[in-house]
Length: 166
Image (cartoon, rainbow, N blue to C red):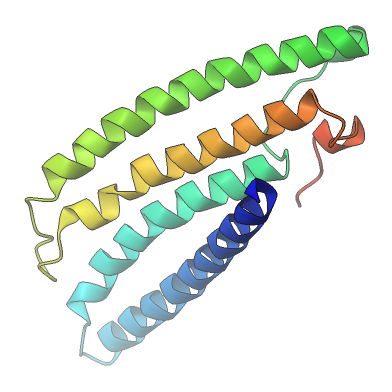
């Protein structure tokens, strides 16, 4: 059941990220064309900036799911499989602690910003800043899943290695 839930969570996350990317492209194009023809769409840039925050955090989690973040495996490659797994688990736990801290403070920040509207649209700034706790929580879930898979029979050694994402 948890695997099915994670599957659908990941699918929705990728769909939202792709939709945000396309929407940002379209809005920036419309704003640019409007400005060129003397009819600027003044709210478009404000909305795209808010969307960009969400896109960055969702893309960071999608990259994390694919083990695509930068790492230097020089020391880890010298270790035995068990020692490497312990090191990767330790690293994951440290990052999870940081993500938990950031998610908590991101939530407090989003609550604080929810009282203030964006100047052009009047939409709450909390909508944009809510990306912080949501994105950090999604990355926490990803690292937790990877840590569990690292120590169970569900994941192979190859699953846990960095992949080329470009």
